[in-house]
Image (cartoon, rainbow, N blue to C red; front, side, top):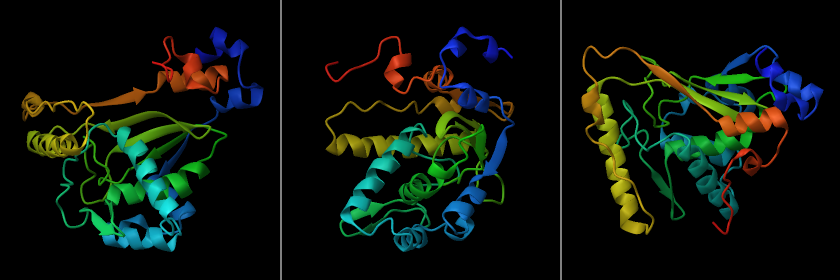
Length: 249
């Protein structure tokens, strides 16, 4: 009701798409999404070599262009997962360690991102709000694992094919949080060795905020700019930013 009273609704995409925002929410697990649109059970592909072979079978690694697409799409998803590293999923484990083929190195996360973005994400229902929940815990972020499963307590909200929000139950185990940041620090140190871009330091004392008495917590990162695009019908994100950057900037 609050959204319907906002002045921005006087300039929207059109009544049909406007009403999509208020349709009943659909909840889909990542397992269901991959099974339906990529045609395989993700729980059976928890090692990097097996997922690599599946990506080849699906025709996603059949050319140099596909390899280029892998690096691009994986980088996009990785930027949405905050910093590299994951509690309970050490990057050094044999199941998620990178493999190399044709001089290109692939991690499990990169292969998953390629499959997800190529086959599953474009087919998320676009006529209603959709929550995709239970992301693989090999996708590194500070989300709690679901005990005894390969999933984490994480969900993302989509509308019209656009991701609007990202949420998860925060990992509060100081040991796992410490491992996460140690891995992230190592990854950033490796970036510094071959990149001339500024790479931020990791707060290695962040884990000290957590104690045995730390309460469960969670939070949602909402893309306000993306939400405004949906409300106003503006197709360029620069149109909803007060100070949009340009190539000249």
